[in-house]
Length: 107
Image (cartoon, rainbow, N blue to C red; front, side):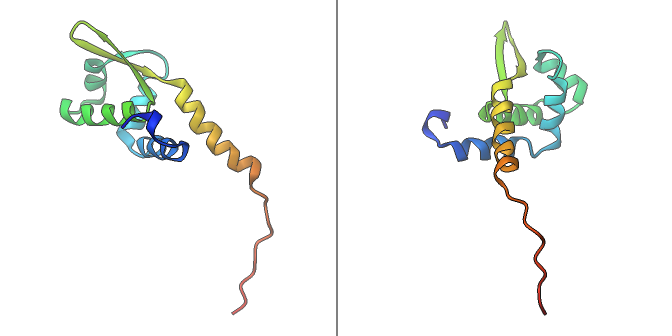
């Protein structure tokens, strides 16, 4: 699925879905400070290659990580622009929601 063929709401949905898993959050935490090879991520998280591949694929499809091929290894880094887009989406709620007094239900 290409990001150019889907609408803004779907992009947000894919991004937030990718952030809904503990392993994917751990991967992003590892990538906060530096680019890592898939072999390094696998070793640090101590998970099977197949499981890590699934999670990295999900992060790539959500455009949350960038990849770089060097020899036989793939290196991952955070795609800051996509994280910023998700953050801006959420901040729109903060700016647009009017806080209303709590309604009391009558029984």
